[in-house]
Amino acid sequence: MGVASQDLATKSIKSLLIKQSVPASIGILFMSVNVLVDTIFVGRWIGSLAIAAISVVMPLTFFISSLGMAIGIGGSSVLSRALGSGDKDKANNTFAHQIIMTFIISAIAVAAGLVFSDQVLYAFGAAGDIKEPAGQFYFPVLIAVPFQAFCMMGNNVIRAEDKAKHAMIAMILSAITNLVCDVLFIKILGWGLFGSGLATATSFFVCFLYVLWFFIYRSELKVKLRHFVWHTKLAGEILSLSFVTFARQGVISILAIILNHTLFAQGGEHAVTVYGIISRMLMFMLFPVLGITQGFMPIAGYNYGAENYGRVRKTINTALLYAGGLAIVVFAVILIFARPIVSIFTTDAEVIKDTPGALRWVFAASPIIAVQLIGAAYFQAAGKATKALLLTLTKQGFFLIPLILILPHFFGIFGVWISFPIADVMSTLVTGIFLKKEMSNHLTDAT
Image (cartoon, rainbow, N blue to C red):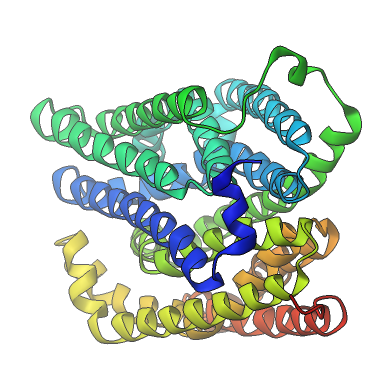
């Protein structure tokens, strides 16, 4: 096995978590800033309706590209444990299978998205005045989704090799490309939402080129033609763990459909725009917590594969401490600066008036979300697909979607916003119970 991946079994947990999480956090930060600035450009250069159009399309295209992320995370769990046990050949076979699955599945999804574009856009909430601008953004982004899928898959494999800096660079290059192309296509050339979509598509391609370069010249994985021979058992292991992430993204997409239709029914295009800003902030403000979660997985997976259960337990505790502290800071920033944050996105007085209160409610339970995120990530890293799936689906699937379907009937649009913290609290309680039991019963060996 490579020297870099061996470090996961020997170096201090704190230094490993920092080494893995800081690049992951910076990469997510750049991607989040990219989404934020993109939204600001679109809102100010095109109009607030354009924010609603992007909010409808992005969950759809992200769902398709996240097929690659699902295969990346699921396969990397297999890959990390293979590296941990010293089985380099299985690691190479796993990566080869990830490549095959990513391109086949994403290509099929894109073809379906093109053939059934009208039906799909309507399903995701492209109604009223949102429909036409949503279509302008949709097509260029959809065509480039296979490149993004490969980037998402590759990013997780790079982190599994303990080379998180390269994963960070890939995300930074993508973000910078998108912002530069935004200025060129929207501001200078005046191509509107089509230009915004083309900028996003170009950023996907640049990210793809960097990830491809990494695997050719820098990766310790050396895939040969023989590794591309299909192994049903290995493919089943990858898919069973990938299904956890895929199911989560599928539920998030269903949530987006329900949210967009509920918001449109409660407050028209205006309400969809409000949530468009909130959804950007959810991704941006939680970047350090998500970075720790991503940094945690290869450390936990490698040591679980090596049967270093004491280190796995310590990794969980350290990740919870860091992620929990950062989540509290995030909550404080949102609580204090909600209105100034919202005013950056738009000059629309009604949006500025209605969004800060909704933003505070959506983030109300953020101080405790680390338990849910780290707990679900542990079971996936350890290869326990069923528990990982159940815990991953608790917030959006078991709690948030039913709450959004029920509460607005009694509380109007406020019922949508209050659903988020209630779902956070309930899912954290469930995950905490599972995680505590697992640590007491299975992660007790001292190392």
